[in-house]
Length: 112
Length: 109
Image (cartoon, rainbow over all chains, first blue to last red; front, side):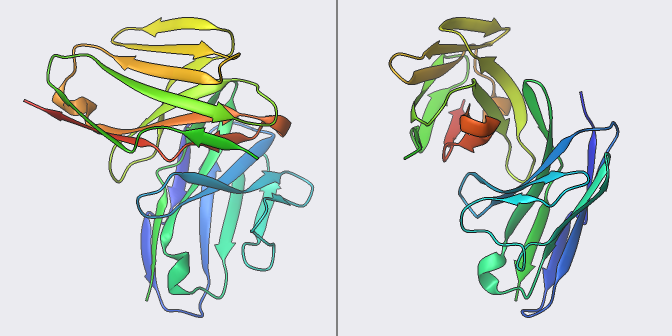
């Protein structure tokens, strides 16, 4: 099973600023996934991050708002840009070790 | 469209059995998953069904009927620590995981 380290675990940010979330996996994986979980709701896929190519974004999510880096097979970052209170949510990274998906502990973001 | 439905909340008594249902309509099907999520924590994998039938794992069992677009998670001998949200997820087209809204289960003495 994959072990994922995600940081920061939580942050409180001012509106208009940006936050970069880091995700480190203990093994090499082809794809890493970024999800958002809004309060009381389930997980929504933001994008799939592939090493060596641009991330693939889901409907409703754009690169300018959520730029993603994937410099190698064990690491990825998600940036939440120009934040507003509506971005307050939990952000999780995930990898698959077929068939299971493993999740980082999540980043609880509060925008004030 | 893609849709996964499960009850919002359930309550049950310690030691009892509870069944959490999930119905789905997705474009493509590559398996159905159940995850457990305690408050403030990441989801953890419970079970996976890709063929029709029952998969048993200790106190937890999961059932799938692909023709009916239906699954359930069965929890036996409930313990207080089973109080959590249970997420039904389908791996649909392009192997993407689509999650239901989750069922919050409260186990009381």
